[in-house]
Length: 496
Image (cartoon, rainbow, N blue to C red):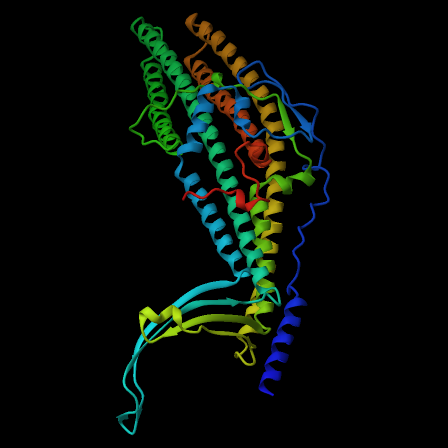
């Protein structure tokens, strides 16, 4: 009777195993937003142009692809060298790479749950039996050893869902690495542009200081001749001092920006000097690729990373569901026993095979609470995904608007700088001829100084806007030769 029950139990386990299922929802990738453009109004055929640095007209190429090394479009070998150095030596990249390797190893470890677990055990004991406090038989040695196998069939898909969750976690780490690449390469070129802008502002300020000093010298000469009042000389000295006072903060910002650039490329500030890249050394890309909105969710690393988190949360629902159902285990072992070591392989082996089931009956509401928490986690990641997508589209729209308006700003600012220069030249001639008062000259000087600094800022803004567009479109990671295929997790190399 006992044997019949045992066979029925094993047969039942086998039937359940063969008809196993996977609990929990099957993850479906969210559909791309049903929008056809990024901005409410259609984009112009091309931006405005101006005859100055970064003044080229730019046009948007719809459904064009972003190159993997998009920073090379700016035409600066020194910048390309800094980018490659940053990708090799930046510690944030190394951290993200190690995180991805860790996630891959965790995936492989989780995958091992699908296979039988094989082990070996051995023991040695000195034993004796007693009756009523007296030894019933002489003491003897007992040596046992042999392999043991256990297997947990994934009847309700808990193991499969756990593997799925770990694969999604690995995918999240993969896109976090891509996001790190994109952030780093964008920060390098943005920092280079900031340094170049500060260098140009410093050069402009130094020129303005030289002009102000020449005017002060002229006023001193006229004061000695009695042509101007002492107050005009003092006013010019004050104006010169005010302009000179703007120089040290610009120099401080430049040095701090260079230190930041050193950190980005993995250098200490005291190491080799960062190359001095000027705005004139950079070329403004004229043709700008613009992905269609439906592709943005495929290309943005932050969106793909957020999607992976949602996938992981979906798989964890299946894990929580499976935990509420019975867990089956099949085990077997073969053991040799002997009283002497030299007789160990001469005895008859003892083997066993069996199956067991563990089913939850009462857990104080723990399993149900864990299931509800899994659904809540999925809802949270789904909301985060929606927020990430909205922010991404807003990011692209804002960048496109900036590209158009900042091009208009540069054109206007160039005109303002040119007219301010012409006006200042005329007023200086009139002042030297004694036709106008000094205050008119002072106003013209201030207007020109502000116009020249504003022109430099407008030039750097056009470069920065272009970088922002490449970044907001995902940075072309899918076109890089060194980007591993996330569909082939086994292709991710370990450092060991």
